Every structure is written in structure tokens, then in C-alpha cells.
Image 1 (cartoon, rainbow, N blue to C red):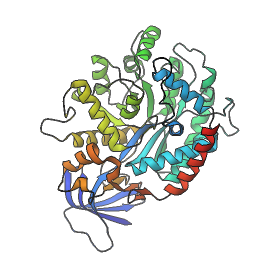
Image 2 (cartoon, rainbow, N blue to C red):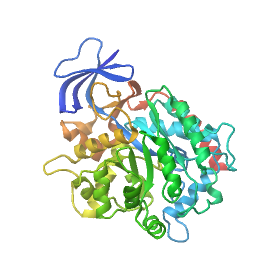
Image 3 (cartoon, rainbow, N blue to C red):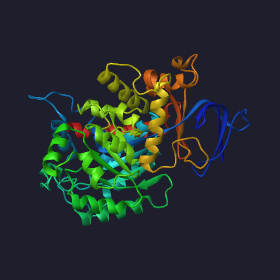
Image 4 (tube, rainbow, N blue to C red):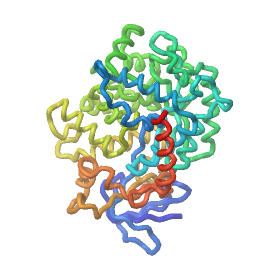
Length: 452
């Protein structure tokens, strides 16, 4: 048993002095409060539960910074997607594993303890299945284990190039499955994580444009009580095409026909009308917000005030992985709301800390979306937590919620000191234990890819 003592920790009862956490088999076995450290305790000043990253495409970490040159016309999500396709066709399984391991190191150093990997790069570059149908999924699992991050693996069903069952484009050939091959992939993914308390599997129908309605129903049926994640309403063009094809906006169609409940995470949900906003909030599902990627791609601004006023849940993800930071995602979320509303402290309650409001909501929503028994410092929860560097000048004189405000709105990743995932201490002094080895492999991969 490992025991960690914090001078101050954010528990379900708020900021609490003198907290001792006993960790056994990856979970919090006991909590004591209001007491001094004892001999043998690992001692820290400030301790927080760690966030889950609810949406990631690991292979896209390799193209970070390579899609920032303007084309001859207007650049949009759709033009970015063509760059992504070209890059995806270059990567072999070793490349994907190297990129994923690097990414997961960066996530842990940034304060994320677990990730939901929305995995759709299934086949060889020519579109042929690998001999092992789950070859690429296995590489994601291997990377997560090497880095030490908790994983909810979400194999993606992707069958079509547009609404109405349109045939896929040639550049999408690495993603494409039919129902039979997807069922086999899902079963293989179940076997990959079987017996691993820090790993889980769910399903991810890519979007309403990539699956017919009958296919969506079959994919959802595979999930049973497991997580179901889907892209929805990221782009205005997607919404318009959905209305033309299905007679309804995407979130409305899902609410009316797909049985959306707390198993679901609707990723982005950027362009919802008032009825969809209230409906998604009432469903118990999580809105999967990816503020940095949504800004990078010019997606638009999620209507967070109305959604939260209706009782909606959200978490944050790093999506295209152009930049990694738990605090950074929360800061971008709040700043997007400030720009839209031309106001300040938009997502806080009157008199409350914005950092605390953002952190609490993302903590709960992320744990739900990953079906991970974490999200608070509570007995029985997975031991996912982090400490902040109390000696950093940014925290001088600060206590309570001012610590969260300083982390999220000022210092960001620089404040992260140590991170535990499933009871394993992975990051010490802001550095992942395998940073150099994994980084060197990723650098070699990138030099070769960039020279190709």
C-alpha cells in the first residue's frame, strides 16, 4: 500500500487540509482528513483529482504544426481534412505507436490521467486489412501501456463518405469497415483490454455521415452498457447536409432516434439550436468539447451558458492533438465564451471561481464519458490524481480556488508536478519517467515522415 499526504487537497467536500490517501491495487483504499503526515508518507502541498481526456485521434499528433500554411482559397475544416488524409496514408503501425506513445507522455505531463482514444486508422495504407484485424488497435493499447495512461479504446465504425450511404473516398480507405468486420474488430478490442482495470472499450460510430441509420443501430447494440461516442454538429455544412438527407439536424436526429443517454458522448455538438441544447442536457449524455482543436479548425463556439443552465454535462478532449494541456483546454473553453459574449467569467456562478467551475464540470463529465471510476478523491475510485508545484512563483500567496484559477488561466502545464494514473506515479517533477526514450523514437519517426 502506498500512502500520499497532501497539505491541501480538493476532495468532494471542497478544499480540505491534511489529507492522507491510501492507494491499493490502483484504487483509493482509504482517505483520512485533517491529520498530519506520518512517517513513510509521500508528502505534497497541493493535490487534485486528475482529468480524463475524452476525445483523441493519436495518429494526428504526428501532423501537429504541419497544416498551418494557408492555401490559395479559404482554409476550412474540409481543406484541413484533405491534409489529414494524405498524412494518414503515410504512417505504418510502428509510426502510429510512436506517435501515440509520445502523445500519451505529453497528456500525462499536462495533467490528464486517462484518455478515450477515438481510433479509426484500422487498415494498411493500401486499405487492405492487416493479418491481425486489430493490429492498429493493439498499437494504441501498447502505447498507452508504455506511457502508463488509463485507456478507453473506442474502435470507430466508418463505412461511408457522406450522408445517405455515399461511397467512401479513396483517401478514406484505411478507415473503412462493414458491420461484420467491425464486430470482429470490437471483439478483438475487448480481448485486448480484458482483465485490465485501467482499460476499457466502447464503440464510436464516426458520425451520421459515415454510417447509415441501420448501421448506427447495429453498432450501438454492440455497446450494451459501454461508452458510445460520436462526432455531431461540428460544422455548419455537416448540419445543413444532415437536414437535407435526414430531415433533421444531427443532434436532434440522435436525440429522437438513437436512444441517447448517459452512455453517450456527443463530440463537439458545436452547432445546436435551443431545443437541441436543452434536449442534450436532459439526456444525461456528455458534450465532448475540444476547444483548442475547435479553434484551430475554425469550427465555431459551443453555446456553453445555455447548455450549463439546462443542467448539461461536459468534458474536454484534445482531438487533433495540435497542443496538449488539461488546463489549456479549460482556458480556451472559457475564453471562447468571453469572445462570443463580450463578457468575463462567463461560465462561473455569481461570486464563484471560474477555474473551479470549469474543473469540477470537466472532472465529472470526463469520468462519465470514459466509464472510469475516477473523477473525485473518493474511496473506491481509481487513483487518478496530480500535484501542483507549490513553489512556483505563480502560486505564491494563493490558496483554495485561486490555485485552480492560477493553473488554468496563468501557468498551465508548468504547474504540474506529479501525476498518478491508476495508482502508478508516472510523472515526477513535471517529467514523465520515459520521456527521453519515447521522445527519441518519435523524433526519428518524424524525421523520416517529414522527409518522405
